[in-house]
Image (cartoon, rainbow over all chains, first blue to last red; front, side, top):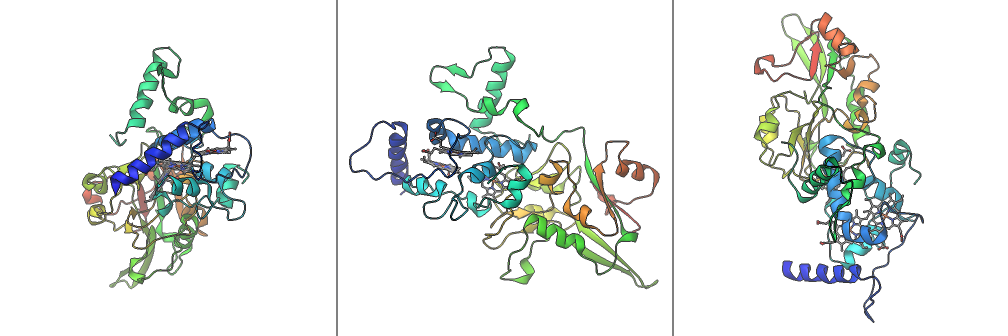
Length: 128
Length: 250
């Protein structure tokens, strides 16, 4: 099972690493960008490295109390949350649709609120 | 060493070393580049992080604390999203709770809030097998729930019963205060507020002004001046844990 999952993820990674190459007939994840503009890094880099960025940011904020940096999970959510559901999870949710496709299961949402928070947005000075 | 050793951190140190060497490049080798470098730029980081020059502390004047009043407890729950409907009422998280003390001889009632005392020598940190229980540079004792395995040794070790365990799935968290099933949690001194220069919710809510929050190391702060001039107590001072929370009137 674990092997199969890894193979699947590997397959997805190949797809993601070669955006120009499309395999005829292969269904693609539906990625909706709710707030057009720029991400914190170019899309290719985000696709490949967002997990590392988040992990790094997590330790800087949690352990060292450094806040307001680019790779904050709450900032991803504020930008990427769906305008209809307000969330990055659920069917068609920004993080979820891609992860379902790549067979990635995040436990982050056990604790982190996947909905863009009004309170948080105000505090951070970020328009949702 | 509080920082869990992982690849991204090592690469960050590597990147810092490159910066010091004055090479000023993000590329270490062809094809190998470090995304972390851009984030480590101090000018783009509004919050510099916890400093070891600071020691956050709280002074609680119990003579101002009214029996039956739980405004601070409610403010804590609102701020930190502790709002779950419990399957078992005994399992509720208590980041702060009110305790009534009675002197049976004098028939004198006394009320005070009890929470994590933010020890300088925290027993919870000593017993934690994963390094999840840790003390920040500025003295705030926290659970890094990314590394907490829910073993609850720290709950046993804490002399103040300050920690709780989350027994059920949660969905209505405050975005700024992630918390969830299977982890131990406790008062964070509202670290997300303190890092923005605000005071903990309990301190701001108290109608009697019984709670004072500030930097124990800053001789000019109200808390340091009062501790220097007035008498205050550390609960179970015999344990010599050097507490961040001090009480008056007990």
